[in-house]
Image (cartoon, rainbow, N blue to C red; front, side, top):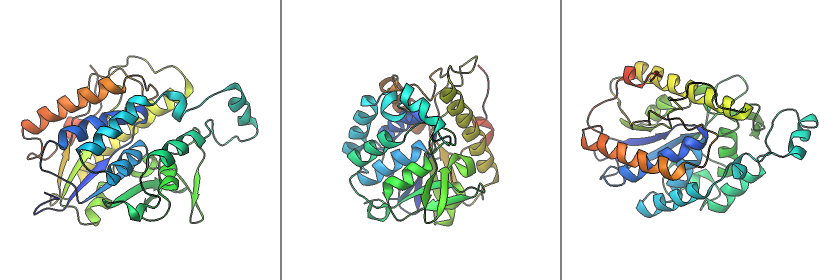
Length: 285
């Protein structure tokens, strides 16, 4: 039921390697009759949304799970002495995005956003902090822009504008989904490493952890301020969670945990009960 009586959007938030959690959520959602009329993605959520938009079915989600379980840190964040020395020549970023580009070019079944079988929108941010919705043009460039965490990846120029990670403006673009006609929004968050008692080791890991905290607060604020005419349902993020968004070794376990928790949420009426923002606030365990 592609939204049935209510136009439905799936919104994929960001979160580095924790993006694997969204695959488990999708696996559980595919067990229901609910299907989105369009999808929105930001940061790593743009990657998942784009792949799902190309194969929005059980088989497609299974292939996405295989991709995630095969990823290693070096596939996305390749670091080497040569690369670190390159910072002296290219001081705007730490990581060369060429490997991430290769992943996208290898696995996406279409080249342009407007050619996705399921309507797809990608969220990025301009240099003034304003959210930019990308709905046409190169899918790979849009995703690279949406995932360009400042300082980690270089900004991406699209239509003369330098764009960066969608989390900086509005990682879960609920209002934009509503403006496009969504009356029911299902948010797939990645969550954050809520069980960590100290910052994760390494500069990139700490930057990504900070971004995931920013995402959690943005999501809570957006839900609080959205019109009551739009139903918002948020699949449960995993907590306790001690996995850094820079750790790709736990994908299999995260997918399975997310599938089980999302299935329980659905069976408990999660798709019938609107989200409450206070339940989503970052908290200690």
